Amino acid sequence: MINTSLFGDELKGLGFTFYSGVPCSYLKDLINYAINESEFVMAANEGEAVAIAAGAFIGGRKSVVLMQNSGLTNAVSPLVSLIHPFQIPVLGFVSLRGEPGRPDEPQHELMGRITAEMLSIMNIKWGYLSSDIEEVRKQLQQANQCIEKNEPYFFIVKRGTFEPVVLRKQKLQPAQNAFICEKERADQLPARYRALEIINSLKDRQTVQLATTGKTGRELYELEDAENNLYMVGSMGCVSSLGLGLALTRPEKSIIALDGDGALLMRMGNLATNGTYSPPNLLHILLDNNTHDSTGGQQTVSHNVRFVEVAAACGYVNAVYIHTLEELENAIKRWKLEPKLTFLYMKIAKGSKKELGRPKTKPYQVKQRLQVFING
Image (cartoon, rainbow, N blue to C red):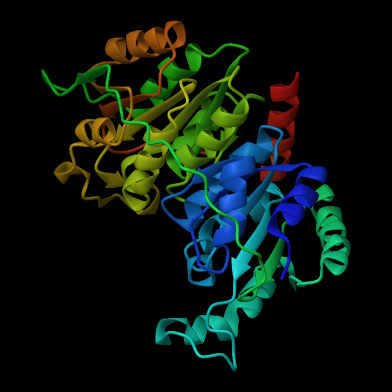
């Protein structure tokens, strides 16, 4: 067994001080250490944890993700369509439930056989974590070399690797909703491009804009390809989680996450995580056209969801129904003057700007210039 505190201190010495993940019995002691001694964000799912860690890395923190191997399947989308194209290095620890030759629950049997193969298929370098601390030190150095080259690295962790760590008592932070405004009048239903024009016109040198995958990112790019923009090209549903990680690590910046109804519906657990950690410098804007616009205009189920109430129930300090472009402008200005975790919901028209192009800058270049902007 590894002395978990000693292992955690080795990670600290290499600069890894930010963790996100979902609990697993094999990793519980490392998670307890991270909660006790570092900064840990408890994610609603493993894909969300990867996106949070990615945002923290963009903000300048070397990040760790922790998950059971069954959760690795949940993390595939951000691993292959966020971590890979943007070249964001995260250090991962994934448990080996269903290890061949060991008795385990039937749901882990197949996953235990394919965990290593999945990582290899995703072009993620990996190794089995040793239980000998001297060997572990060498392994961590090798992993850190990958991180320094903007490559992710995962350790596969077998049962009984970590010595017990007692979890200190945690305090619950009850949600405090300061302002909730539901629908009060008719919707203006502007084009998405017009809403983005308003949002973009209000940015300053402290503002970072993160646009969800699909037409939102493409329209923002066409409106203005700015150094403080990031266009998600995949990892659908992860934009506010990326924003959470960035907002927590760079509290001096104003982080705006631009979301779509189809994307948010895909990972609604993000709302609960955002509300719990509640960074005041995060503004989450949902532009809802009840449509999967990028894939042919198929209808989403957003018409059945009262997003403002959901966001408020999840702990957003301010949750506001936006009826017009004028209200959108005023709400963003209020958030800039009095920052609190805020959710703005606006219904928009179906469709997008005609002859819409795609970003010509490669994703990793977008990430690099955003990091330069943030550190400027």
